[in-house]
Image (tube, rainbow, N blue to C red; front, side, top):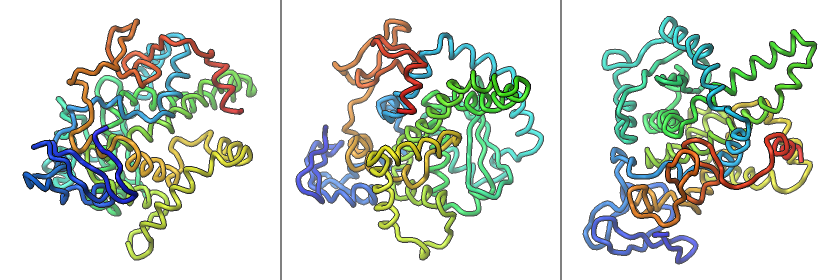
Length: 372
């Protein structure tokens, strides 16, 4: 790792421009990245908010829960092809028609300031195309991404009304992260399978829903975990950890006046929430049944996960240009025996095709562990 802890409050950062090692405040590095400069060459140590992050291997930042739950899904034979066929011929067409006939498309003429933020995030990720972007009326802060072959993004009017520009950049970067991490097909499938399970249950007196339940719950478990990976990639794109946290805070409480909340208290609550699920079997069981039918992690716990990773993981290395990239010679890579692509050996499954060369439990055995 390029960053080396020296005391509780300081770290050593290597300047990406001249190689000088700089001792800086950890808090300043996390929350004031644009003001951290090298003591020797006086240049910014961290990437600017508009600098591209496409030199990074995005799969190296996948949250462990995302990797493990995706591995469970990949135990189902031909799952990718099956889901792609179902989604592309059902919900994708429905949502595309819904968007075009009911929502407003963002452009230079419509929502021009929002469009500027969107274009900036597309450039940071180095997109080679522009997914269509829509605004739709909804009373709560939300955004989502659909599409198998051609992606399209939607954001609510509540988000435009309640979020700052930096927070809007973060929520947009989060949705674009789902595209870069190849999440969209599975996320659409999670919602479609949930609907189909209800319909199947109605016409089979509940038997059909029980049969499809393992797939439904596994998809939902992965769906929630995928949000944690997108959170990481989004903050790498914006380089604004504070705005990522205030966005999550607003998702939790919908507050508009910054005088109504204490940022440090929120982060302390998030850290406590992150640790709470491991404290007793009662909490684990309760958390499982509370989360089983929701598509996103609890926001306070989610903030704790992101903050823990930012402080203890690869966040500062990545935005200071010191993280090992996919374009560098990386000895700890493995080659997938199925699709031939190389990926980080830290990952349990191939992020390109989902294959694993390591033996593991069957899908249904893995699903049972959700109840353990």
